[in-house]
Length: 312
Ligand SMILES: [Zn+2]
Image 1 (spheres, rainbow, N blue to C red):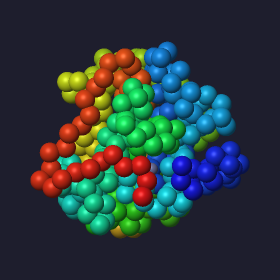
Image 2 (cartoon, rainbow, N blue to C red):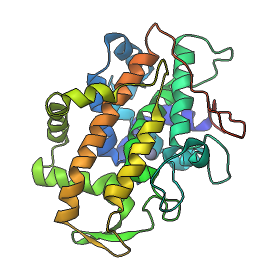
Image 3 (cartoon, rainbow, N blue to C red):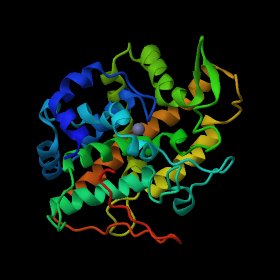
């Protein structure tokens, strides 16, 4: 167990309360909502395994740990590249072999690579198939749950040149911020204030009722994974990339003033992405913690790939 893990196990509960939500990924509320919904879709077996892996302070709630990779990102600088997968500027299509690398060009170090990596670790651990078994499966669960959220945030598959909207300064109603933060936090915060009396559980219930209502038929296909694969994050990143072009970047230039029109056109996208992340995270955890053995993802990129990393 690394230093970060020891620190976290020692004082995680206290630090968690003191931490300010990071801009890396949906804000804490978005990640909480995704994991809260996901837990409701777990099979009995998967729920038992998930709760056994959760740290004690989570009190059986997956949602309590889903912002952990953001909160401790500064203590895990090696993990920074795992939160997103940016693409060449003006490219609205994601390609794993082209896009999944860190700034040093190390393959598989991006959000989709991280999902393949940590889902594999969890399955190997659950079926006791790893010869070494030196993975920290609690951390693997917390990474997977967080990265399912990140890969559904459209600007986590944005453009390299503006760091997924981070360098595009905009005003959000009266406040200056950047486009990435608008999608991480601001749309959700404004929705909470405008429609939910600042009550996150009300927003979660509203999305849950859409999953069992207007989105029910399509939600059945959200959980699909190709053939007998364990995890299928590539289509999620492709969707995010398309949504980034179609909604997040659309008509937004440096210094743009964003308000009602932008908020109301993008809110339905944000709500559906939170829903899809929750449904898909649950479906993947249900596959991981089942008696069936699913295929690990085999990446056929021109250069060799090694994606079973823990920490460096
Ligand atoms: Zn993140």
